[in-house]
Length: 466
Image 1: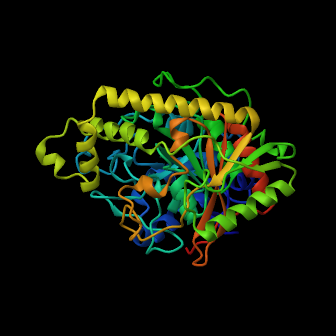
Image 2: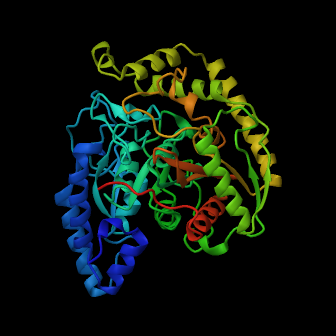
């Protein structure tokens, strides 16, 4: 039998269908892998092995009868510890959240996975309330990069990215408020998609408002499309959720990129200093995309860095999520989070509305930009993974995590679909990501272009130790 932890969800399902192996075989293998990697990378808050094996056994019986329950029956999946998972505490990386209680409810995306027979391996790590672009917290400690454990896995969905990269489940649910699926995916060498806002319902509502998205983190674009087909359905608990997609994302993968109008912006008009190795790997991938038939032009979207507006929305959201805490509980918070909460609490409604104005104008500019271009390509990040346990790289001069991730948060402001695809490594073997962005509601174009890169061998999972 092949190494089941190296297979994609699509490959696992094909094996179940043919009878080559069962969901119990796959679940045992992924649980063993998860337990093996945990001491080194710290990807999990907790593993739910007993429940996983029970669900896998039920799935195996359904497959034996030829009656799978849904599109992902028997596929192992992990859930970021921001999202509710019935029967398991959701502590959100914080010592201020009590773990007692019944935890009777699933988040919408988790409920969809449950209905489709997925097997839940456990909850993955997050910084406290998902507030920053690296994954460490007072509750669970530091999550490390699967390529080099001395480096950060990124964040805030760092545990999810590390788990997928190391074979502890082919599918993961992450959340993204400013790059939080794309940053760790790029640092760990996997695929991730931040869908159009509302495509994946979210409940409870995030204190960060309409910046917050739920998205798939996977081994490739085909798995992400399949996962989005499952989780991208409306839920009455989210009043801002979109209606059902007009078709299957998985079925739309094969269109290729020939004839697509693609804008390539290597540095957002010189606003971002990109490391040479990153710039070179991204440019090579863009050139090869052109070789697949895309019409590529090097040009920049017409906007300046909206970081001040993003900070206003982000810091006030952080202040809101911690507003109920007393003085003793505040002392338990990550010091960086406590600091931005203080800044956010001093901002006024007029400050907030001014940031909304910036956001609206940015959305207008990007809407006009996509009148001319189907896709925008950029580096996902200007750097590769830096030392674990730090919010910013040493000597960078950055004060906050947003200083080193200027390509990601603009598209949370605009709510556009944006994915990261692994397109190479630097001289230290650290992964490099290419970001693919489309107009709102054109998630299928992002997935289609990413899939073309995988099919052509341009994108590939970064090899990691096990």
